[in-house]
Image (cartoon, rainbow, N blue to C red):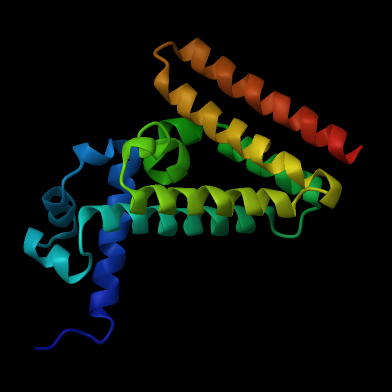
Length: 192
């Protein structure tokens, strides 16, 4: 019996979804292609029908994961005013839930500490993902303040990366609270 017409695309999406979860939870080099394929219910050999290399998989995972994050934020903000939209993104992003569930979160803090040592294809995809997030934030800022987008995104990503890295729960909570408060105060001043 032949596979359905869209079987290859569905399989590719399943591989990307599993890879996204795995890379967000573990370091890139801790996650093997055979492990990803096993989780999807396929053999290692089937991987090469979808990707040329693990680097291509990581790069595509960055792109797809950020597309998913941007869509999630666009849905979250709906038709809210720009100020409220930006505050909602900050509160959702810099949260205990984001720290505790990295597999459901943003790819940027998950790979942020290791991507600088990766191949050009991975670094370019990560750069594009970061740029897409900055563009989203920029659309929510007044035109004369859109230069603040890089700082806002850097604070969000950095706060999550650092909060996940520390061992003391109180310190983690302090990082999240302080960064969230700083950004909300900054955003409030922009619009007042």
